[in-house]
Structure formats: C-alpha cells, structure tokens
Amino acid sequence: MGKPKWASKLSTLTAISVIAGCTGAASQESPTGLQDSPKQEAITLKAYAYNGALGKEDFEKYIAAPVKSKFPNVTLEYIVPGEGSGPTELLTAGAMPDIIMTGLRALITFQELDVTVDLREFAAKHKLDLTRYRKEAVDAIQGYGSKGELYALPFYENYYMMAYNKDIFDKFSIPYPTDQMTWEQVKALAMKLTRVEDGITYKGIQPIDTVDTFGLAMSLSFIDDKTGKAKVTTDEWKRAFEMASEMNTIPGNEPKDPLNIWKGADDFMKDKNVAMMPWFGSRLQTLVRSNADLNFNWDVVSFPSFSESPGQSAEVDAHVFALSKTSKHQEEAFQVIQYLTSSEELQGNFVKLGRALPSIKNDNMLKQFGSEYPLLQTKNIAGVFKSTPRQPHKAHKFDDIVRSKLRAAFADHLAGKMDINTALRKAEEEANKEIETKQK
Image (cartoon, rainbow, N blue to C red; front, side):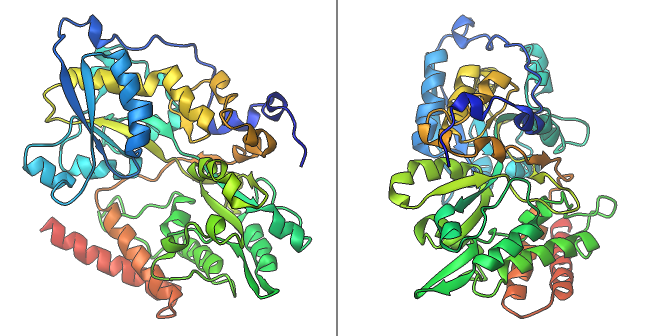
C-alpha cells in the first residue's frame, strides 16, 4: 500500500461527517474559570473511574493536569472501584465522589442510586451551548431520562472499526476486506481464511466477545417498555443470536473458551494468526503503540453491518462525566466537567491520538485524527468512518440483568447444551424471575 499524504487521506470529510454529524460550529469560549470566581480556597474533587474510564496514567496526563492548569485551586483525586468502594458502598458510606466518569451504558447504575444531577439547570446557568456537542451523543444521554433530563455530558465518543492482518491475506492470495462489508460477507471471508497450514492454525476472525454486541448492532431493546419485563424471544434477537453463533462456530475458528469469549480478546495481536478483528476503535491506538512488536503488516476498514442496515455499525457508545448529588462542590465540579467536555485543545489531544472521536463537533479537529502517529498516515483511516453509529435503544434499569442472562444462555448454546430458541427462552425466563425478585 502506498503512503499518501495525510491531507489527501482525509481531504474529503464526507464519510467522517456522517458519523460525527459535523456542522463546523464556531468555537465557543471555555467556561468561566474558577480563578475568576470569588471562591478561591483550595479544593479537592474526587473523580470516580468507573466502567470504561481512563486509567490513572492517562487520567493524570489528559484530565488532572489540564484541570490544574485551568483551575489552579482545584485538585482532582482519582478513585477506582474495589472491595468496599463500589457505587453502593460509597453512597452508603457518604463517600460518593464528586465527578463520575463512566461508559454511557453504566450511567444507569448511578441513576438507580439517585446520585446523578440533571445538568440542564447548570448548563443554562453557565451558558453551555449543548448544540456544540455531537447530537447523537447528547440524544443517547437524554435517552437515560424520561423527560429529557441530562444526567451527564459526553467526554468523547467511541467508534468501531475492523483491523486485519494483511500478511495472512497475502499468504493465501485472498483479497483484503473492504469498507462497508456486511457480517455475511465477513463470515464468508473468515471461512476462506480458517485453515491449518504448515502446522499453524489460522483463524479467519477474532469473535466479538459477547452476543449482546450483535444486539447493539441492531439497536435491540432488552426490556419491553410496556410491561417492564425482559423480551428477547423475538425474531430480531434470534437474528442477532444466529449471526453471533455463526461467527463463533466457523469450523476451526471457535473461541478458546465458549464460557468466556473475552479471553480471546487479544489473540489478533498476541497469537498473530487471526486474520480479522472487529472491535472498538480504541484498539487502533493499541495497534499503533504495539506496531514494533507485532511483526506483521496490518490495516483497518469500517466496522461490518447487518445487511438490513448497511453502513451502520452499532449503538452510539460514549464516555461521559456525571455530577454527584452528594458533592459539596457542585458548582466547581460542573465547571470542571464543562471545561473537560468542551475544550477544543483538550478534545484535540484525544483526536490526535486516534483514541476516540471528540465530544464536540469540529471539522478541522477531525482532520487531525491520529496525526500523533505518522504510521496512521499509511492506513485506511478515512475508511473507518464510513460506518455510522446507530441511535441506542431505550435504556432501562434492568438492562444489565437481561444482558447477563443472554450471555450465559449464549455460552450454553455454544457449548452445545441448547438451541437458539431454547437459549433465548431461558434468558428471558431467568431474567424475569430476577426482575420480579428485585421489584418485590
């Protein structure tokens, strides 16, 4: 593959603007700094690194340090879940951190504990223009409320992609995958690549870790909105199960452990005998940083889609910041959240790393995607954004119960214990029993 200039690689932002919803909105001044406030005493704000949050090293570099520079009297303290420091334990102990950093899908955990603040009043007070954020991210967050509540602000938006090992394709003289492939096409390609050659087992694809990811690729609900009960014995969920099953049962390509597909998450990079890896875009940064050790030629294409919805990857997934009702420094904490989610400089750092899409809409910023790594100039980065995210299903407080039952039933199916219809029926029945117990 040639090495075109970065400018020519992303000269046309059509594909990117589809996923980003970019409008080239004008820059907005960052929020009024705490240094401009009459309140000048030094304060410490605790930030809870929950599901999907940045590790401590990245937190200190990309969050704590910029906040200290912007707000000299504020220190951010990194808090992680552990024994005795789960959300419920912290709330019970009166020690819930001021700021909650979490993946969007775990936001409901804190809503159930009634600790998240509806940020609409703070946004109005501090003149935060919500239209600067990616519409799909804000819409997804507001989907966690019943009346348009805004229980968080988006810090960045994850994206999906599929990496592939070009050396394996070259070895077997099979054409590379292309952008906007369907899962059916990817499966056919994986079957061609799965074989044993010179004593080496080659696998066509690294299976996606959980069956519910295929459900998210169809924006399927876990709960019937009318009854409040699990509802997965549907044609749509059967379709998701069938595709997940087909991808995980290609002869010779089965997961190492059907009970924990996640264990195979790094086979593409560690074993180096896996041809394709569909995953979150965060893996792109891992690939770049590990390139010297990989010892194989790789590239990326857009995330596969179901044939019913060509070009669509999966539900919007974002990393969000929420404000705790128990915080004694809500004003200051909100201004920190506002700064972190709306600073073009700070957001730009993540874009340059190729780690995620920014929370704010900005065409010029997207032109710098992955520019921190010259290696990415040789990759099909523009193609990654040719798949667009789906709007999420309506979140429900019992989603995780159904999700866990689906995963367990799918593992039983892969282990040959039951067919798909039985697995779905089992997941629904067991989920409803647990839901009924919790309601009592």
